[in-house]
Length: 231
Image (cartoon, rainbow, N blue to C red; front, side):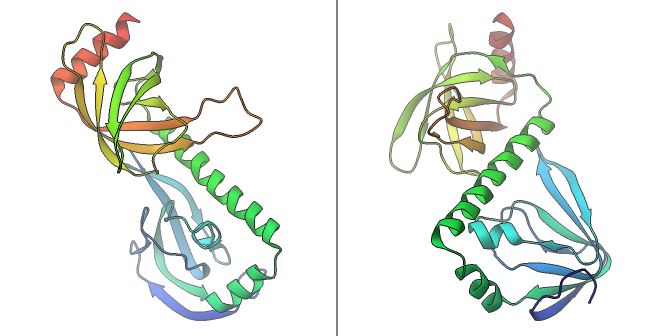
């Protein structure tokens, strides 16, 4: 077997060039090792594909889903004909459960934090409009009720909402943004791209969530741009 380590495998799968192995945002916690070929890891940033890296024979991927129980953070596609080994789930769970509960908790915390860092990095990379410090009133609805909140900064493509109870990453909702001097709030279909939950010992970090606008009318875009330009 290629690679430095020998893994207990439950099976093997072969993929053709360009075939999707796992899709960003989908559930799943299988862990793979590349036996031959290569795997391209990519993320979708504002509708565009962004290649993170290309993994080679012997490298492992899919481990974040197993450790953190989170949805797939990226898409994996075969580069050329690629054969993967599926690492035996029973073996992984047995090895993982040998760790102390405290150490497992640390690993899971690191995994979730890494997921948030990735989302923030690629949100920044895909951003074409600068964020302007701006306090604006807004409302949105979670599963339970309407919530009133405020922005810390905003751009033509998104904003940061200050809240100690951020929604989950990927959650889509209609944001009602109230601008000064505009009688009716802008209604913008939006999505949570990353979150910053409250953390003890970091009073300088404002908790909240980064929001990307998915659908906004041309007129509302113009009104928002004028508001941000006015400072």
